[in-house]
Image (cartoon, rainbow, N blue to C red; front, side):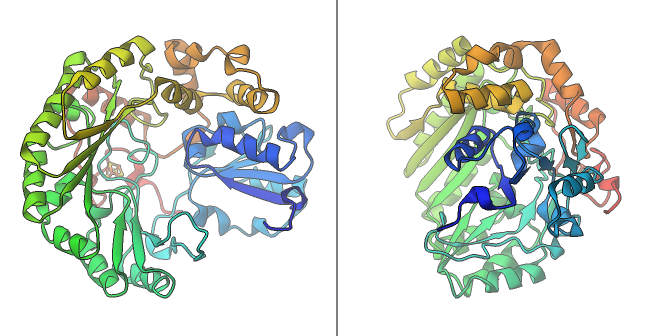
Length: 452
Ligand code: SF4
């Protein structure tokens, strides 16, 4: 962008991955001196895409001329992107089922690529200024494990894998630019050809990095440890998320014994650094459930001599997931649970505890509507506190209002309402749903969706 004024471009695309980025987009527009309000602006045309737009596009409606729902390969293959006048472009977009065009078409269905052999998702521009100094390749999309709080296991189905033959080209593409390679995906180790991929990449790269690790895959495949060790991976990261009693409710299919088995393998293979993720504030969670987390950490400390780092977050209810209608925890409840976690005497465990304030803003962004978007605008441009323009509690605790937001959500992801409701019931009953098997499973309604 050096030497160019962003406001001189006819069209600007934003990819918005996380809810807190709604505010960052407004800060960027302010910095670039671009009129943020769609109705007051003629050019540039401003278009949004990215995971946060599938989750909740509503806060963006006052600012964006169009919001594109789904995966870029499907959306950008359309010839409509050959530059056209604004009105003509928006009219054409309004005919696409994956586009939201405010005032013309306010509902959309997610577009996704059925066959990932047609994708080329890798860091195509190698630069010393890039955030990750490594060659990144995406090897998988849509999580087959379907944890009940998680968007990736519900709004990105079916699980799809980039075939090894396609990945060979993507791996080769970065071998001259970087010494390190990063494998991207929400369930990388469940790729059916994972060992072929890693062995092939090992010929060209000195170091590996993984964006996710699944405990069950780690325990079942000790060969993974050998190659990870050769390639400089030092830390094993897992996300039990909660204590043993609620783990089945969130659809995690392993118990504490399996975690201990992992520790045993780690010590045997000389991996001396463990990182764990937990969350508090899940629906129905009691102080006893939080004590179970403390108990598990105590057991881990006794059974593992290496370094142990723990990050705890606060549960945020997300649209499209079985826990979408959950009530966000109040401050008193979280305070009590944080007190439990602070009181445990774990000498060798380094715990990172969450901020209630930040979680509340994230929860508001995940549920917010156009009024919330305008309140963010007044905060960024005029310094007005959010509370002056909205009642935050309404989005977090008013059941009728939340129900209405769910019923009128502008995005269809492809999973059926019945599936989501059944999964909610299974959360309450502590019952598991099996890992995806697209060849014969018809549980969520996606796998019978015709190929577009
Ligand atoms: S239909 Fe079954 S296999 Fe296919 S995405 Fe849904 S849950 Fe997974």
